[in-house]
Image (cartoon, rainbow, N blue to C red; front, side, top):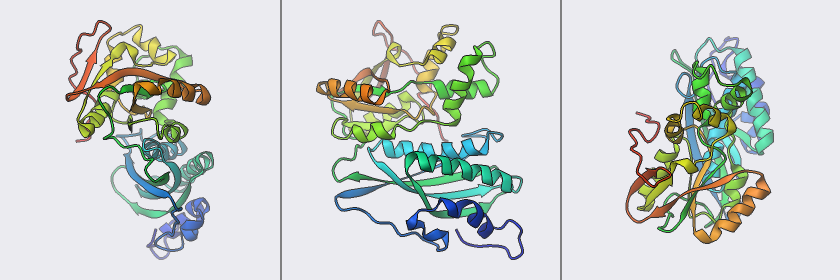
Length: 330
């Protein structure tokens, strides 16, 4: 984070000093230098991931800035969770239009501080620039995992079972609600669905506990079907998923009961940030035990086979056509 315009009332250095320096950990050196210094413990590997979110694409421009900050951090923590890593640090780059002044930045920093405390992570540095376009927020997260215990996408094997944490489709419905869909949905369901879109819950504890159990894992960002396809492509296997087995929240069921065709959209909608993984059939008891200990549903939804691609089936085993398996970035 470097560079300032002399005499600018809210320049980069002032922004760093007021809002971001309090978030820095020891390796960030008070954000007074252009680089950070971090240690890597013996027997550990660093896991590094980066994601960006754009106003109007990944969040709505009028979303509360503290929630925007928490979503930005959490989508990256979800990537760490998918490799079984413990979060340590992050770097932040912001490209903000002038309309987002000190009050917006203060609330954004408050959201970061709240989640730093929750997840035990701290800021190392980054960059901040101005833009005439929509806000673009980028974050690089750094975690650690014991050597040889990282969980990759390429380990799925024929005979594995496919599992998913939590519930599927809530974020998809939350965004739809923010855009005016499903006005008939009961009020008690609306806040929960919108919350799942605005503030995802990265499964950091589960990811770390699946080391030594899961053969392959990914977090669901683009949609369950599309992300499972990434595992299958990388592992050179195929998957069969039963649509009725996908775990849905009571709120999502409230939508599906009135519009059954939505169930397929929930399997492809994205932004769930749940963990999708494969594991040998003999691990079922260990996975059930994890579900009990964490108080988190973990549901078996299919199996891995020889071949390629992902096949979605109904309760009778008939293949369900999929026009678009998930979110397309380009």
